[in-house]
Amino acid sequence: MAGVPSLEGMRERFREADREAQWWADHQAEFAKLYPDQFVAVLNGEVIAVANSIGGLKMKLAGMSLGFGDVMSSFITA
Image 1 (cartoon, rainbow, N blue to C red):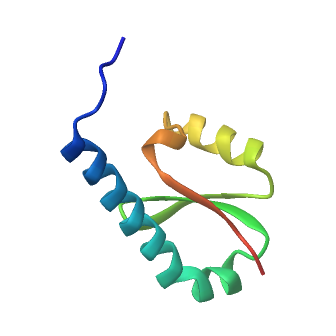
Image 2: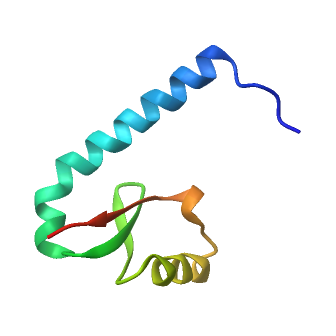
């Protein structure tokens, strides 16, 4: 069983979440044109999978031996 994360570990998780949120905000307008109403997965700043459903995205990621914990993912609204 994993122990309780340290305060610094929690702070780093919040910083990472902030960076991810900012990355999506920075790309929202572009992605809204390219991938309207689609689920998008990004790895290392590159779109690696797009699907109409979360299940479809999960299957595409699994085909690459990846899961949602390995990528950033979001539903892009038009």
